[in-house]
Image 1: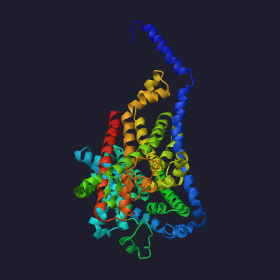
Image 2: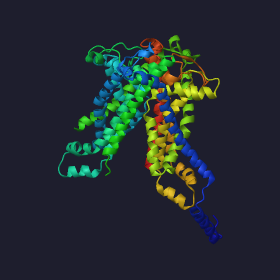
Image 3: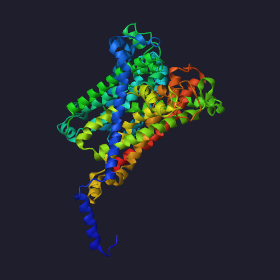
Amino acid sequence: MSLANPQKFGATSAATVTERLTSGRRHVGDSLIEFGLLAALASALLILLALILSVLENAWPVLSTRFGDFLSSGLDASDASSAGVWQAMRGTLTMAIIVSLVAFPLGVACAVYLEEYAGKSTLARLTRINVRNLAGVPSIVYGILGLAVFVKFAGGFTGGRTVIAGGLTLSVLVLPIVIITASEALRAVPRSIREGALGVGATQWETIRSHVLPAAAPGILTGTVLSLSRAAGEAAPLLLVGGVTGLLTTGNQGLWEQITKGGFTSMPVAIFSYARQTGADFREVTGAASLVLLVLVVLINAIAILLRNRFEKRW
Amino acid sequence: MKIFFLTAAATTFLITVLIIYTLVKDAWGFFIDVPKADLWSLGWFPRRGFFDIKTLIMGSLIVTGIAMLIAVPIGLGSAIYLSEFAKPRVRKVLKPIVEILSGIPSVVLGYFAISFINPNIIVRFFDSANKAFNIAAAGVAVGILTIPIITSVAEDALRAVPNALREASFGLGARRVSTTFRVVFPAAISGIVAALILGISRAIGETMVVAIAAGAVGGGLFSLDPFQPGQTMTAAMAALGFGSDQVAGSGLAFQSLYFIGFVLFIITFLLNLVGDRLVRRVREEY
C-alpha cells in the first residue's frame, strides 16, 4: 500500500468498512452460498427421513399382520411367512451382556490409568496413539482377530464358533470407543476435586474411587451405552467368527448349552441373511428386522443422550 | 492399584500385537504358497485359484470414490453451516440429525441400498445399471455412512479456529461468507483434510453395505463399471468368512482372507495415522 497519500487511503478504506458494516444489504452471491450450505444439511435430514420411511414401508406388511409372531419365531431362510428373529434378538442380548462385562471394566480401567496415573509419560502417549489407531481399524479386521484368537487359539474356553467368541470379539471392537469416551469424561473432572481429596490425606486410589469416578460417572456411562449400540449394530466381524447366516435350528437346549455350543446369530447377521434371500416377501421380512434393529439402536442412543442431559455437570 | 490399571492399558497393546501377528503370519504364508501369476489375473475367484488383488482394490477404490462424491459436499457443507452460520438454537436442533445418522447400523444401510437407492435412484437415472446389485448403489450408501465422520471432524476443526480471527475479519469489513472461506476455512485446513482422510478410511473399511448391495458374493471378474456387480476387499473377506463361497476353513482360498485383511489393515492404518496427525495439529495450533 502506498504511503504517498495516507490521508486518502485511510479515508477510502474507512468509508468501505463503515459502508459494509452499516449498510445491512444482503449480498446475493452470499445468500446463495449460505443457502447451498443449508441445503447440504437439509439433504442429510432428507436421507434420514427417506431411510426411515422406506424401511417402515417395506416392514409394514409384516409388522401389521404378525408382529408378535415375527419376534417370537425363529430364523427361517426357506419360508418368509413364518420367518422371525427371536434367536437373533437373544444373540444380540447375550453379546451385549458379554460386552458390558468385558469391555466396560477393561476400558474404564485403561482410561483411569491414562488419565489418573500415567500423566504425560511416553508409555501414556504411545497408549493413546495405539487406542486411537485401534478405533480406526475396520471392523472386519477384528473378525479376523476373533477367528484366530477366540475361535481357534482359545477354542477350548469359548467352545469355538459360539456366542462367547462373538461377544468377546465385539468387546475388543468397542474397547477403544469405551477408552476414548471414558478418558474424556475423566479429563472433564476439574483438578480442584482431586487436589481437595489429596489435600485432606486421601491416597490416590481413594481419591479416584470416591471422588473422580463418581464425578465422571455420567460421562463414562453415556460413552459405554453408546458403544453398546455400536456393538448391537455390528455384523461384519460376527460373519467371520461364526454367526450363522442361514437356517438356525438350535435354540431348544438349555441355556448353558446354547451359550457354549454351536450356532449363534444376532440381529444384524439375521438382517444380512434375510437380505440375501430373493423374493418380495423376504424383502418385507428384511425390512421388519431392520426396523426392529433400528428401533433398538435408536432407543439405546436416546437413553445415552438422556443420561447425558440429566446428569451432565458444568464445573 | 496402579499395576491393575497398567495391566488394563497393556491389553490394548496386546490387541494391536495380536492383530498384526495374525495378519502377518497367515498373509505371509499365503504369499509364499500362491502362484504369483494368480495374484494378477482375470478376477477374484478364490475357489478356482484366481486371486487377482487388483480386482478387489479397484472395487474398493470405486466404492470409496462414489462414497466421497456423496459424503464430501454434504458432510463438509453441513459442517460449515453448523459451525459458521447456524444460530446456537438452530444448531442444537440440527446437529442431532447428523448424530442419529452416525448411529444407523451398516446392515440397515445395505438394505436401504437395495430396497431404495438402487431401484429409485441408480436404475432410474442410469439405464445400463444392474437392476438388483451394483457398485454405484453400494457406494452411495457407504457415502451416507461416511457423512457423520466428515461432518463431526470438520466441524471440530472449524470451531477450533479462535474467534479473534473471525472478529478481525469482520472488523475489516469482510462479509460472513468471505470470512468463512478466506479466513476460517484456510485456518482449519489441516482438520478439514483430516476429516476427508478419516472418511476415506471409513469408506474403504466398510463391509456390510458392500456385502449386501454390491453383489458378486463369491467372486467377480475384473471390472471398472460402477453399474455392474463388483467385489471389494471387505466384501471378499466377508464372503470367505461366512462361506457363501464354500471354502471356509480350507486351503489357500481361506488363507487369502488374511492376505486381504493385511492389505486392508495397512491401507487404513496409514490413512488413520496421517488423519490423526492432522487432527492433533489443529488442536496444538490454537
